Length: 378
Ligand code: SF4
Image 1 (tube, rainbow, N blue to C red):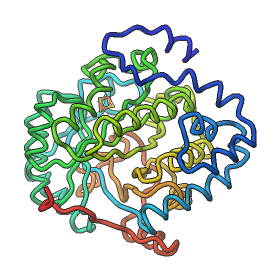
Image 2: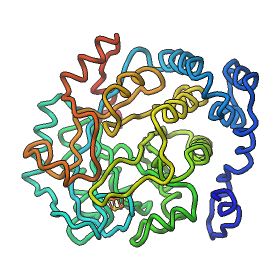
Image 3: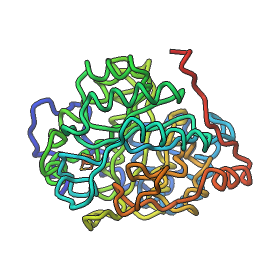
Image 4: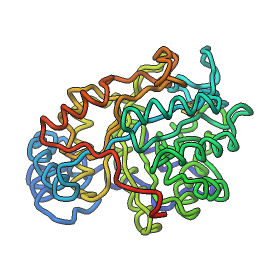
């Protein structure tokens, strides 16, 4: 269904680099010998990436894991970079059907005051966090660009690395954030299927597929150093979404070679509205997707958040994944006042504190890295 709709979709400004359809046959038809050939090559193509996502590759998961581990350790050493999210506001005008902050969800809305932001940041500093990701929903009168801008300025005074996950912005707005000390953005397309995108994004600015998919290009043109992209696994066909994400990554790497991308693998989690996943991706499928990305993008940071269970995160650390969030709260004011998780954007699964998580990493002979960048480099 996805593919028929995808082919038939007509949109102005639809990116010419996005078309997973030709590679789906590769996924269906790949044999064991194709998987072994893809594992042996040093520069896999998109066709080989598709092969690594195939059912034949599912049967070779251990071999994929070994190759992914070898490449991860070769490029990142025995390190795991850590960061924490900080929710600035849960006001939102968006109508994303899968999100607990959607404007039709009946839940208390909050935004941090300047004093509360300082308190949250101080709680994170006490946890030794050096990189924070500031989050807010779509633009609202309560939490607009000016609010985000002043929050970035405040955060940049305390943290060497401040990134933002918020609404898609103009190039000028990204430039202003860059000047305020923002080092990068995270912006998931959620689904690369334009028809499904329209169904899930029922109202709000985010409904504009073309504007959102071009946001990483605008961010790089504005001078931001890093852009994190991803698809929300569970919304669309995870194979087609992965191939589309591959194409997006290649487009950004070729067009903005001075910048750095990272890839994330968020899976749909339970949220207060009770949305259920149309295409659930289980842990085995998720692991295969991560291994395939690592094998094809050996030096790109791959990120796994606390959405995932502790045992799965422990298993993926250093085997594909080299960057992880830790001790996350998805509520506004969650670090200081422990506001209820049922007010969060989604439920988290790995609730360990920083100390416990780092001790798990060290037991696996992995070194937690809190800081790998300083603002003086800007
Ligand atoms: S995903 Fe973002 S834009 Fe959509 S409802 Fe949630 S907070 Fe709002």
